[in-house]
Image (tube, rainbow, N blue to C red; front, side, top):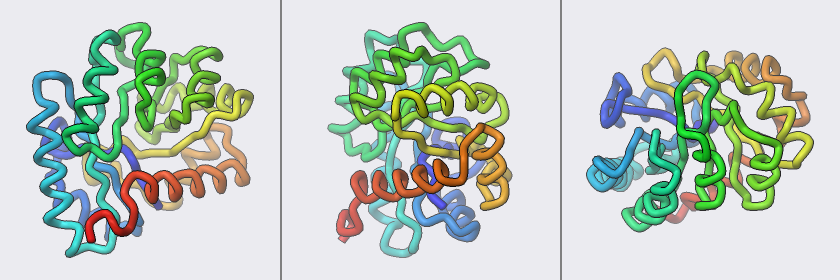
Length: 221
């Protein structure tokens, strides 16, 4: 299993990076993205902390650690600049908190993130057909979310992505130990969102390829 969207007490998660990594490894994860919430106020300190943690910890664990960030409730006009800054600071994985069905995310956020070249648009339940086509053209991955509230938009995301040929990933958006995915729960989220077994297999391959692109096996050598 691979999970590209998790949180620690560096933002609003319940546990620290070390405990999150240990619990994920124990659960059978092959790779984990640590992507705490950030905006212009904490981006520098947050990425510095998670990059340092990944570098100092990777040699002691088998699970692949991906230092990242989730830009959250950032004004659309500010997104492209923060995406560039996040990468310059060392983030290997950049998520954007998409226009979810359950939060008042600013209109235009989805498009701004896609145009800025983020890696994953998180739980974008309120997304247009045009934006999905743009994501497909720009190589931006759309997220199927295992988080109960954000997951309410999964069906729309799956349907539109299927029509447009957009790449999908499935993540936990974990904020606590109980959010860490099991194979059984991951399968239920996938099929409950309308994915077929073949589509889920493609998602698994997509996520493996993305991890190797973002953090090659030689990255921490």
